Length: 318
Image (cartoon, rainbow, N blue to C red; front, side, top):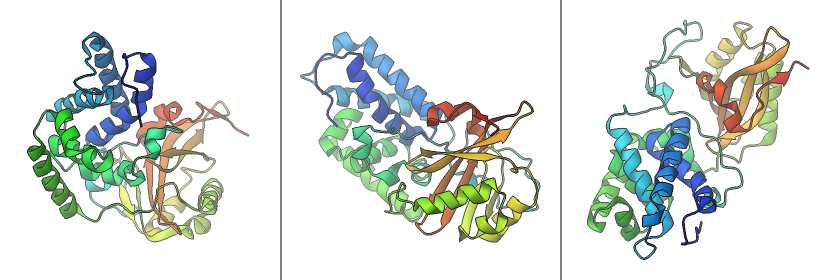
């Protein structure tokens, strides 16, 4: 993950961008917002490049210092984000899903940085939406310390330099952050999110596209969780999910195209339109325990972000 400590140029900024996006994402919990934040950080680096002194800090340290200050400032006026399942009551399959979650209240997905060497060195589970949502329980400064120390493996001295605090303050904030995360619930699984049996995913696509209720139900964990932000509606249980899926024709004729998000399998869901093409409908993020699907998050608010996830703007009907 080495950026050469030389003059700041476009190549250096381009190399830094993917990891800054992921850092900002863990801080603010919003995929599109993280991309905007990283762009602002790079713009500030570029504008102040003439004042950069390599004797004082590496370019990466300087970039993370700017990113930390920027994200902490953003968070001062922002509501704490959470998973959609933490923002409304559990529903039944026959409930009317009309209410909307409060705008900006939920963690949104992040496209994977394909091929970025820095991403390969990070813990896969630290980008999952459940972990990012847990981070939002921390104060902004605790969040920054924990991510810099436990995800990026910066030393206490490096973290102190980035955040402009003492090493003692870093140690104290890290201990409080770890304690707060531990009290919030079990840690994410150690199973890398990308290690899902391809046959499970293929079966999910076939059952979904054929509207095969029994076939879909056979792939679900007994306590599978389904949500569809920004609608304030979520279910727990394979029976309820299968019942909802089979109760109408809302998804009949839809198609799924594979992609990834948050280190997990995902699909672009396309719906037929009146012109005979298939238009973006939702981003479906799938989590698994290796044998069954444990969580399905159908993000209805991501249809305008398909390009960011490497998905086509439309499909032909055939």
